[in-house]
Structure formats: C-alpha cells, structure tokens
Image (cartoon, rainbow, N blue to C red; front, side, top):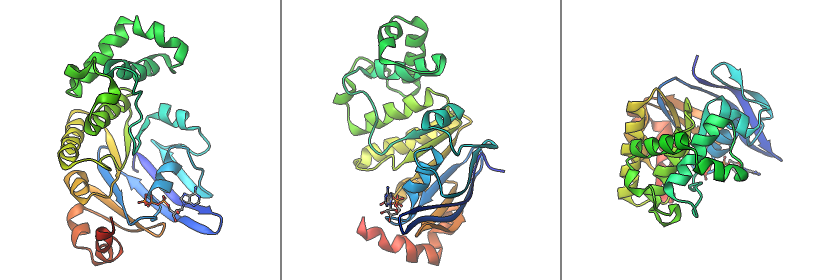
Length: 253
Ligand SMILES: Nc1ncnc2c1ncn2[C@@H]1O[C@H](COP(=O)(O)OP(=O)(O)OP(=O)(O)O)[C@@H](O)[C@H]1O
C-alpha cells in the first residue's frame, strides 16, 4: 500500500465531471508526477488531497488514515505539506522571520499574529530557523526582505518553510511555473537534494516536461478527469496514448 491512496474519487462541478473514478497510489519515498493537458483535473485532485475540496465519491487516505472531512490545517498536521503555484511567503518580513513561523507552528501547534513578539525572542526557534536556512543554502539571505528576492529564491524559501513542518508527503503544484530556466534548474537541484537528504515522498503536478523527467520516478497521466496511464518516465515518454493526449498539446502551453 502506498503512503497516499486515492480510491475511486469522483468530483463534479455542476454537470462537469472534473474527476471520474480516479485511482492513484503514491509509494513511500518516491517522486510521483501527475501530468496531463489543461483541464485534465490535476488541481482538482490536489485540492481533494489537502481538504480544499471534498470528493463526491471515493476515498483518500494518508498512511492508512482517511483525510476526507478533515480541514486543510488538520491534514497539514497529519504530515502533508503543499507548495502553491504562487509563493506563499510574508513579503514584509525578513527571510529569517518567515522561516521562524513554521518552526514555531511545528513546535507549538499553531502560529497566531499575537505570538510574533514571543517568537522573535525565542532562541530555540531562531536557531531552528537558521539551521533550516542553512539547509536551504539561504543563510546569507537571512536578513533580506522576502519580497525583494528572485522568484526562484522565494520558491526556495517557501519549500524550506514547508520542510520546517517536517512533512512526510510534500505536494508541489507547478513549482517552476513562470520561472526563468536558471531558476527552474535550481529548483530541480534543490528538490533532488531534499529527496537525497530526507525520507520524504513528493507528489508533483507540473507542465514542464524537463522538470518532470528530471525528477519523477513514477508518472500518472490524467486526461479528462481519469488516469490514462501510470508508468516509469521511460515508458511514459514513448507511450502513444500519452503523446496523443498530452505531449501533442505541449505547443499550446
Ligand atoms: N471550482 C470550479 N468550478 C467549476 N469548474 C471547475 C472548478 N474547478 C475546476 N473546474 C473545472 O474542472 C476541470 C478540471 O480543472 P482543473 O483545474 O482541475 O484542471 P488542471 O488539470 O489542473 O488544469 P490546468 O493544467 O489548466 O491547471 C476543468 O474543466 C475546470 O474548468
């Protein structure tokens, strides 16, 4: 059984079948990519995993426990962390202050704005955040305003903030969307490093095939709300059904 098990999940929006009978098993410790043309249902599926949407039918379980009916923050506490398409960082705070927030939340269960002063004076949290920034190769940027960093560094910080919560499953929603090639390659290297250093499982939605084939060990291709095929990258590359449903549409992106 995988660390994440999706069984017969369907989701309709009015008359539109966004997902129909989706089955997906993500093996522990792997990088599993979910690809597919625009409108295939990738984001809808991801939203069903993190509690932002509730499937009409089917089940979703993480480490054998159902996530359905739980709120996003409860699912996060179960060990699933999600990195959004647009970096979710606090632009007005420094890089170090940003990193301190998930470190504080991990230790104390939650972060509230009125805890800010207490957090700033907390040596253990400062130390933990500095350690995480070193891990992310960002120690030299600790005093920078988060808003003033490049898109690639913002993404690096955000991924680090997710890792500070020590998730066992990291969900990435198009982590390189809108990035220049150099930032994309840095993000690929960072994710490879994270994978090497930690016993973590990664599920990634991505349009950029360079990113997918650089990272993924398994690939599920979604088309019109249904998994078309799941296989290794080598087999997906040459699969006629995939070429027809997806790779043929690459020029549209
Ligand atoms: N909240 C919603 N209300 C109505 N329809 C929706 C909603 N969210 C998604 N859809 C529809 O469901 C289908 C699947 O959308 P989804 O965003 O999951 O696809 P996707 O594979 O993530 O696409 P993209 O690659 O463009 O992000 C699409 O037809 C979309 O228009």
